Length: 54
Image (cartoon, rainbow, N blue to C red; front, top):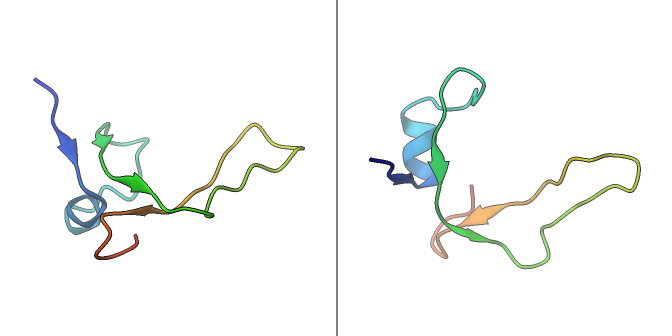
C-alpha cells in the first residue's frame, strides 16, 4: 500500500535525501513557481498545502 506524504511530514521525518528513501509527495504546485531551464532535463517547483509553502 502506498500513501502520500505532505511536504511538512517529509521534512519532519528527514526525507530530505530521496535517494535513500522512496515516497510519494502529495500537495499542490505553487502557481508561478515552476522553473525549467532549457539546458537541463530537471524541473524545479515549490509545493504548497495553501497554508505553508515547502
